[in-house]
Length: 212
Ligand SMILES: N[C@@H](CCC(=O)N[C@@H](CS)C(=O)NCC(=O)O)C(=O)O
Image 1 (cartoon, helix red, strand yellow):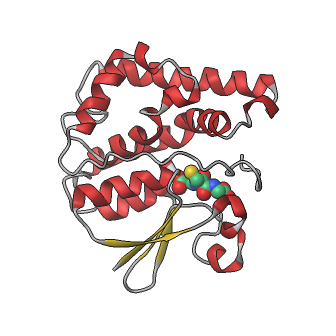
Image 2 (cartoon, rainbow, N blue to C red):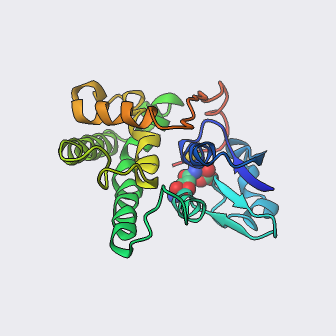
């Protein structure tokens, strides 16, 4: 059986849980206490060299890290990743955008929800906020043209983008002002096998290890 190395408040890990739910694939979970430094133990670094979640272990013992690489692997041969080379590369284009631009939302949300925002330099917070708003503006423009980010079909690019975008208000960003993004969020929620879950950070998530 597949093993997902997970930390429940992680939206990167949620991407994988969401796809597994769409696919109806059974898996077991191993929780990694990333805030307590468990990710930096040699045993876990052998699974993911960066010490982050998510990571996936296959039946045969091979391991894969990086949320979007895991999505690509699991979605291969399914409706969530097109076969056509150009269409598949388009999915990668938007998953690269996610790692690059949506990171602003992820960082701001993490700092906001763990009480670290006030300890971050104002210029850095302003830069992240501008980057998060720009990412939402880009999505707003693109999603006005088609129902899902790559076209008519819901793909792992939507899954990757959805994870942090639909929680942008928790980053202090005015998500409700982005009507096209909000309509797309509802279209994602309506997909068969959608996994509706939210795990807030635990009270002491901010007490130990500093994460970026
Ligand atoms: N690019 C990676 C980012 C993974 C990541 O930053 N995961 C966070 C949780 S959302 C984590 O485990 N942080 C702990 C650490 O970096 O030590 C991905 O998409 O999987």
